[in-house]
Image (cartoon, rainbow over all chains, first blue to last red; front, side):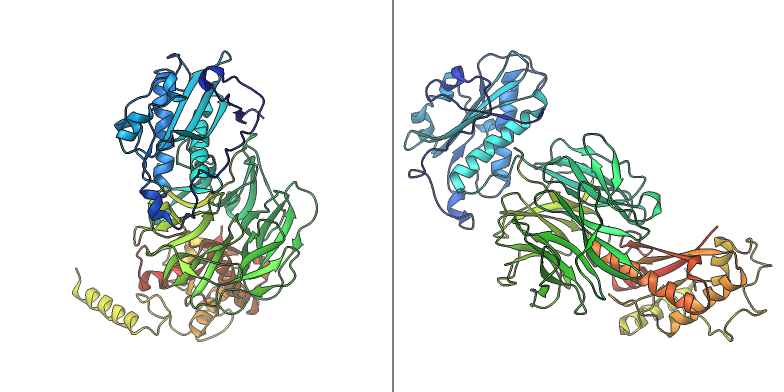
Length: 456
Length: 172
């Protein structure tokens, strides 16, 4: 795999000097007894934690395609990306490299603890970058407890120069996971719909970006309206709806080849596509004569579609449980949009949303413990509930928020917000406390976000 | 600004506020049709200038009756819709070579996937009613645009009422 990162096993002593490109070896995290524990909903204590992220060092300032000014400047950029990740997820209020002293290369593995203690720093993230003979970069990342004067964890990666940001995301993931006890999520990507033009002539293009909005790329040219993309679990394909040739149908776009194909040949409209967690199946909805049902088809092509719902009404969408055994979906069979569960073969269908208003676009958390959905009661709000339909609570309160998608670790929900009258759209994210909400940077209007898994 | 026009708009707004009408408020209901089926009183061709059997001619002849409107989340064809659809059927009967697409739409206050399904349901309801008047369903296709193609751009009840619609368009 050309784009895979190699994880380095760093030596315990003098790591920067000893780091060599090596086969991928996962670093075993240090034992947890000296670490911090707690849950992310208890975020007030986290924000008091003083985390310093100074500029990454380099052994020698070398030219690299990753930065026109060389590896020294690249070290600063790497630390800025780590800082941005940790600041923007809402759990921490770190201090970034632009207001901190710059450690020397030898200090990366031997921090000046006394000086950091003097700055009220409790946690210290340090790192380095250097070029290898083949042009690739080696990036190391270290987390220290300043009070204990102890290293908590470390890791390192070999990346192609074009993938330098991924090394920074891996470092942020390492720090986040070690401090929160949660699974990582920064090194991941988002597919979405880029929107331009006035409300009655809106151009909608398929686009992708990294989890922090970087490496943005348009995939379709906007001649045909594109909607509701979903990344395949391996990021090789995107399934989405296109009005190519005038009618709404689902295509599978292959990112490597740039080719796309219909998932099923039908004169009927197909929409609301979703992947199974293992990437083997695609759920889609198809309308026949005003009646919409949910179908399942093999993602690799071949085989005939299997109809999962039957009966009058609009059955639409669908999201698999992480183990692939159940599907949560939306139906108006009761008279208005509500959320239902069924087994993956379509059996055992039952409604789970009973709290007033309409409930739409359910998405099962990758952790399995929550279902995010759009609650329509006057305004449209993002809400979560348990798979049994209990514990419903709103995460947002705006005029129109819809279409939640989960971070790979199930701690953050992304969605899109529509501005009243102008119809301008933007992608936002909020953590499960509902308190840490922020807008994602996108070059133009943005809707229908779909967050993919953590990259290998 | 024309004072009479302003008064008419105000009156229409008051009607909208009364909350009962599902119709796009600025639009007057079409006059009742005297007859079913094709008659000599079919669409006029002379003064309109468009070529009979084309979309331009159809739109002129329908004079607003190419579009029917729906309540929130609904897709039923009421008496007013029946009148408009009968006019469309009459036209299609007169121009037997004409084919049409019924475009279904929803307002912006719903989720995207559901609105595509809802627009499809509305377009199919219109198609089924036209077919029930003797027009072959093979001459009618449907397409749903969900909430993607609003005609009224505001974010208020009046705009949404105009956007919950099914529009019949002739294929030239």
